[in-house]
Image 1: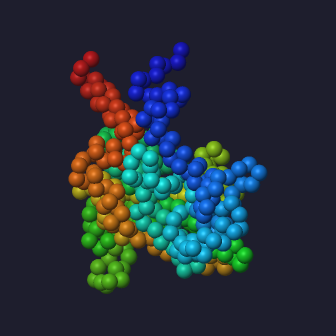
Image 2: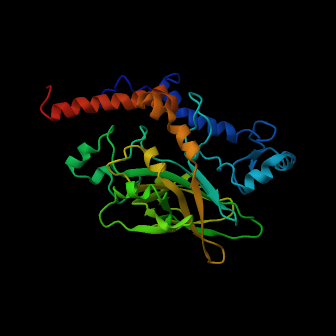
Image 3: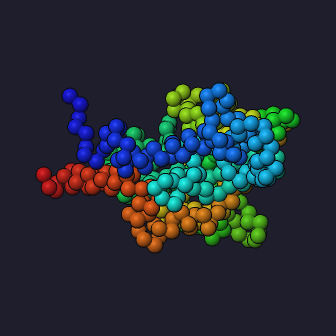
Length: 363
């Protein structure tokens, strides 16, 4: 006998339910963007699929004429400067229909001189609390392998030590003249501001390797560099690797999450940094104490390269403004809509009742 469906969980056939409207909006937005020409807005049809820009994969065209017009009108610069990430359901920056915010805010972005770039977005909990356990699959301090007493302390609504992020890295080199680059995910480091180092280091995991990086503006000060405690590659070129047990022909070393990217190719990394301490509870408190993320890669000639994606503090402040000024509930409503907020708050209420009963309270 199947369990009874809770009244707050909708039937899949109810398209007007706020939960489904919230969850499905992102998919609909990306699908519409893929089905229309970026230049003229003409819809795609079966006989003539739209073609995307081979370097950035962020725009689609119905024919060569539209591509040339759009390129001359501004895409030449936008593509070269990594203005927007490739169009991907797993990293959508389009504004949601039920609010003024995107599904994935951009907190940092940058690119190298030889056209490899990256964008950094939130990958943590919906309530913006630092997590108790890592969000990726595989070995690591996940909820599935925590001691029971630690698992109870890790319930939603409480803060832990992990800052969860997703970083999309793309190769936009000329497909006619260049080959593949290799991005080593395990060496992507989060670098603190000089003033933020002490606070971030208060949450240092015993035995964790911390880099000391000289501050270029003041030789007497240093920054702290953090390697991710846990890292996975959930998507390559928009394809979910969960369905292939993490395997893909582009992954050259799964232990270090190293991926080979040809021109136009991109990979999404899911990283968890152990930075939470007694003074930090929310994601923005950690982000405000970070200066940049350093992205390492090996170029087509085997040369070790790296570039920085600097934290965009105005973007961080804008995203978390409602949380700081109006509180958690208003932040959830404005950023995630009524449906997902209801799922989250209902879950917290049920967990509170369960914990009370487990602790010998109401029967």
